[in-house]
Image (cartoon, rainbow over all chains, first blue to last red; front, side):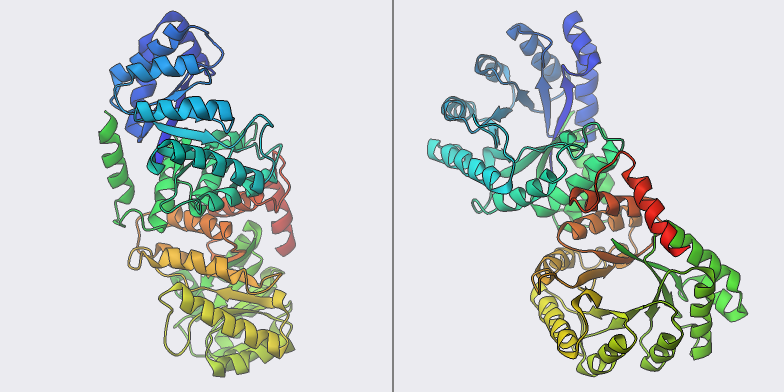
Amino acid sequence: MILIGERINGGFKDISQAVKEKDKTVLEKWAQKQAKAGATYIDVNIGAISNKIEDFLWMIESVQAAVSTPISIDCNKISFLKEALKICEKEPLINSTTAHDERLEQIIPLAIEYKASLIGVCMDEKGSPQDVNRRVELAAKIFTAAIEKGLPTEKLFLDPVVMPLKFLQPQASHILEAISQFKLLSEPSPHIVVGLSNISSQTTEMKLINRTFLVMAIGVGLDAAICEVTDTELVNAAITAELVQNKHIYSDSFLKAYHTTSSSQGI
Amino acid sequence: MILIGERINGGFKDISQAVKEKDKTVLEKWAQKQAKAGATYIDVNIGAISNKIEDFLWMIESVQAAVSTPISIDCNKISFLKEALKICEKEPLINSTTAHDERLEQIIPLAIEYKASLIGVCMDEKGSPQDVNRRVELAAKIFTAAIEKGLPTEKLFLDPVVMPLKFLQPQASHILEAISQFKLLSEPSPHIVVGLSNISSQTTEMKLINRTFLVMAIGVGLDAAICEVTDTELVNAAITAELVQNKHIYSDSFLKAYHTTSSSQGI
């Protein structure tokens, strides 16, 4: 399972304050916590708190000073992305391109140049997809563009766009069906990723809904998630789902074995 | 979700002792606990503790005296089944027939006569299935026999035979794939049921494995399980999986709403 730690995001108060005050310790703490919990990438998102490229680069540098886990560069601005790519010490993940022609044209070559992996989000100028077919259509568009330009399949992550269960309940089944169809794009298929926390937005049972939806999504082919990696029950559910799929060998200490291996990589 | 409470089984020490001593209170307690937890059926299995039909009928009667939840008659002996069917106050579930011709010939007509539902376990004289194809073949055999003899599809439950993850790890994926293929037998499809606890047999993380496998199985079409219905986390995971599938309408109190409705039916 490829776990992308979502916590270093300007949307959280402690992160916003830390960026303003240039207090590295908060970012270091969250980087270490997420690396220890098994994050494959540490997502860094400045959110709406600053327009300064220096602030974004400072965030990435703070994380890199604390852990060796690669960065997931989470930003919309191509100018920010370009600068961020220059300072990443390990091959990063670009989070993200959409299926807009213009963005595909610009971002895919950047991913290739920097040996970065790339999340392709299945939306375009017409907005978010509302059904399975539209998701698959946009996934195929991103996949084709990536392959034609020379991005290796194993560097591409397709994102079917998770929507809140509370407000768009029928979408959840569409997303699961879309994941199972993304798997058919190639053999081996590209990675499939979700921004998990969207599913439980404004619900009273966030962790239960996150965990249950994640297991169902893994069941149909998901292999990556941007999520709360410090939620042990969530990560244990994901490991167990992969155990059921025979991706880890069963031992009585399968949870411990996974945590030992994955957390030793980042810190 | 159709939940079949597994706890009234002679394999448990307290049940075995209660049957020997004809102590109704133990069976009443478990019947009520399971009904309250949302059991759709209360499974009654005498196990190896007695060969006397009176003992089995006493078990069923004790349960019926305590709750109005229908009985799942869990026995291999056709003579026991016949007597048990006569005393069931509500339409019961017969647990189970296999795909043996002889058993299909005898048990399907009994199910029809008593308006019982019937679990068809995908094994026959050659033993347990080892792959997806064999499971589907046996499911199709049971399904065809049931339909030809006149059992309504909605009364048939197909069981793909769950095996322990610890000892037969690759089987888990086969079972999930078999479930998704059973769904294609007809429209609407028959119910699909598992004996859930087998998956976690002799593991150190029984509840986590049960819960995770159940959610994955619901994700591919399972709608019934013989399980530990008093495990609240298990039942909540199942409800949430069905919420993701849009089978219950979301409300902030969706767990409470489900428990209130389901437990009020049996007690």
